[in-house]
Image 1 (cartoon, one colour):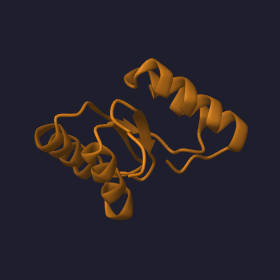
Image 2 (cartoon, one colour; image 1 turned 45 degrees about the horizontal axis):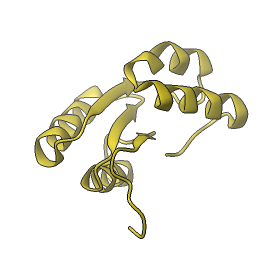
Image 3 (cartoon, helix red, strand yellow; image 1 turned 90 degrees about the vertical axis):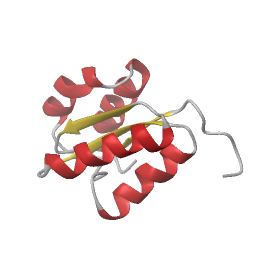
Length: 100
């Protein structure tokens, strides 16, 4: 990356598998704390969370939410670092969905 991401907090929707999981790994490799959002399958998200913590030594959170459901995300935002939760809720209110 052309700039330092270490210490940043990121929320990746659909982060438990496929392209989302690769994005989570890249952010973790750069030293970011990663919140992994999933809609249906908790096990892959939890396994990825454990892997990121062990492999990269970063903080992670696993969040079950549909990114278009403002109430659900607001209730579960307490699992995120405070700044990340404010950003996630504000972005959702403004744009309806978030991708990273």
